[in-house]
Length: 130
Image (cartoon, rainbow, N blue to C red; front, side, top):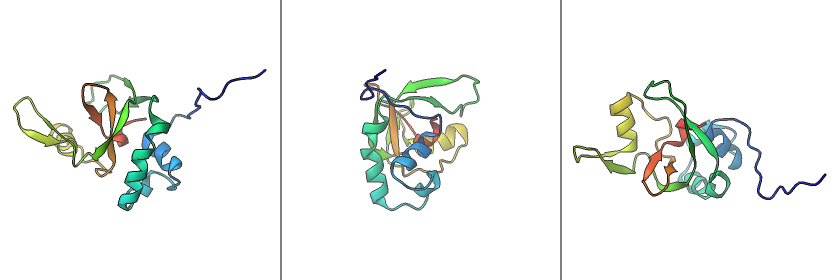
């Protein structure tokens, strides 16, 4: 039996950061902790390998809902740098938003954020995806 493997990717269930660390040969997601800026640039180039992957987002709001998304892309900006406007009009970074709304300090705020809804500018921290 022959199979065309060019359009198929077998990815074992794991945290997205762990998968990206494997792609970048960092020895696990903690390799991002004290990584030089070059590692983050290389992480952005990993988009070819992660685009189209189906991921689940950690339930930070404790809603009990499993939210699934398909990775549409990866930003050039980190969770510290990417800002958006709240309904009040105030600009806030993704890292500050998670801290204020969910009391969640991101472990890797310098990682590029992941686009999960193309065309709607919806980005989430990679560390929240599995």
